[in-house]
Image (tube, rainbow, N blue to C red; front, side, top):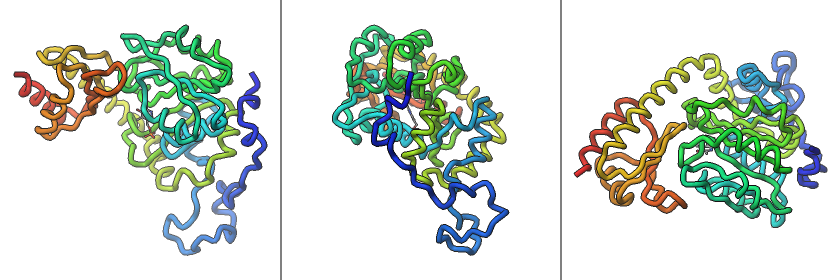
Length: 346
Ligand SMILES: *Cc1c(COP(=O)(O)O)cnc(C)c1O
């Protein structure tokens, strides 16, 4: 597959902006910098950040056992997704195909970029019907976005189905793995060598517990990473974020133990939810939230709110009528949630 044929011609022909810190970011101690009009007095942050985040990428590359050239970092995975769309999708011509229901930002980002967004319905188990999906592919379909585990269902998509899409679709396949750390499956990162058209997005916002620093990750072939780097704003990941992420990666055991707690709390919540009279269905989850179908979502949402608990009302989302999406909290929060869930069960 020739990735360059999928890239927008204007991006392919783009001459990359060379920032003041491009060449010298890893030689900080060897030179006297008088090239970027920074304030020379040391405030710890008076210098621009490394535009390619070399130290952070090295740590991440070691952890994921891939090359730093297969990584692009962004201001949250939302920025990563936006950049991917801008690299590949020609406004008013190309189309993005995704699933329904899935993450709402895909459609918003497509609209912002004036790119047509189409969806294929998941089946009643929130699984992907590959045939139906590929049926929706038109000559203008440039990209398919799959979210696994999916939001808001919490369900993993079947690996065999995703592989079939990767094999049969001749455009870009993005797999959003925001919740992969809570799941039983391993990441598609291991498949990067097999699929040149594969892009995986991950985020520090969920399992890593760092939603506030805004850091998203893209794993893809070097050809794709090179193209994204061409359009990436030079200083999209700030110094504080890079430092905090490096610090985090030095001790990921803490995250691993938190994930174990969240997963066991998830099964406790699952059982409690199933026992409630007003609950009609609890959907199995491979993420850190549970989708639950109740008798009257608006009513139950308001009742929880009256007790000071905010959940996500998804009743207006396709296939999610009367569904609430509840994030797994810490044990203390879940105890209160369980108390309230039972309290309103009358
Ligand atoms: C939360 C979430 C993200 C994270 O986005 P960030 O911009 O990295 O915070 C990405 N995809 C899905 C499906 C999500 O639910």
